[in-house]
Amino acid sequence: MSLRVQPAPAPALRSVHAALGSPAGLRGDAVPPGLRARTGPVHPDLSLPLHVLSGITASARPPRTRLAGWRFLLRDSHGVVGAADTMLTADGWTFSHFCEGPFVASAEAALSRTETLPAAYQPRLLSVPELYMLTLWLHGDTEADAADGSPAPADLLVPLAPAPPGIAAHRPHRVDGLLPLLTRRLAPSPLMGTPA
Image 1 (spheres, one colour):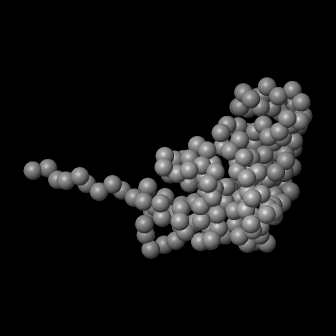
Image 2: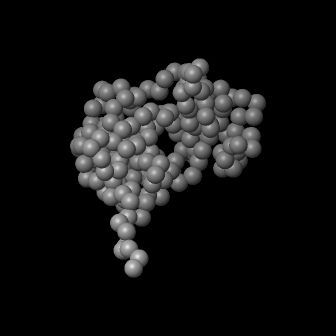
Image 3: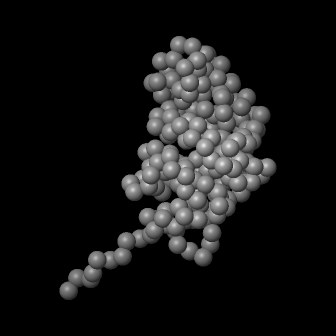
């Protein structure tokens, strides 16, 4: 299988290069400690559009996605060490923040595991904030604009670790199989009875 990565907007990439090259660079207090401790050069390696999923509770309307930004995996001579997020503002794409942690490492692991899948996909990230869940979204339309669209029923979602309880991390799920499970998770619990 091959991944068809869409390039990030040039201003988003420039904003990450500017943040990495600024005098504070990876040394400021807002930079995660692991990134701050790096001594060699760090560069953006792979960019993925970051979409947010909303409206997955049971309703007649289909779930909606919106592009929240682009995440750039940061690599040094040893491998992926963190990520840089960008966001769209009224003035265009700008650097948002650096991050590290389990979702970054899990994204790299999930991307490497996609090599065993039989079809080509366009990789994206899909966040489900209500469940504190991030997935690798493998979109079947490899020529689609990476900034647009919603998960198609046959697209694959690969939950990144840590995944919510009862959902296996790094296991590909078809959208039409995983979204109903997420909908049930977010549905209000029925009342256990009424007081006498």
